[in-house]
Image (cartoon, rainbow, N blue to C red; front, side):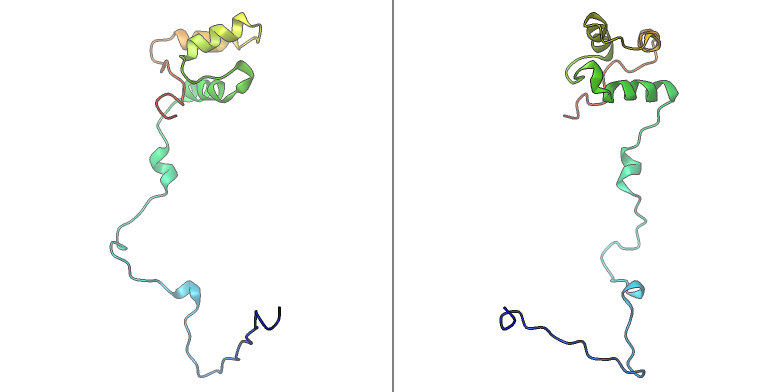
Length: 108
């Protein structure tokens, strides 16, 4: 194996040699002067505390799958099956300013 993968020794650098460190190297690419934001900022939506509670309900698999049905239908199904979903969620789901579909609606 040693003959197949021959090792190369690093040569020592002299004090006169000028090399750039990898952290100071910045390649020039087309459009590099454009400020980019992380992708997570584009995916983040504005929502309030009530929507956060409903999103946690969507992600909690203790109440069964949520794709293909509204949040209220999922809450009613969980209640019928004796899974005891929180009563506060029913009040939130009956309010008019709440999105009826789960967070996975039209994404999967």
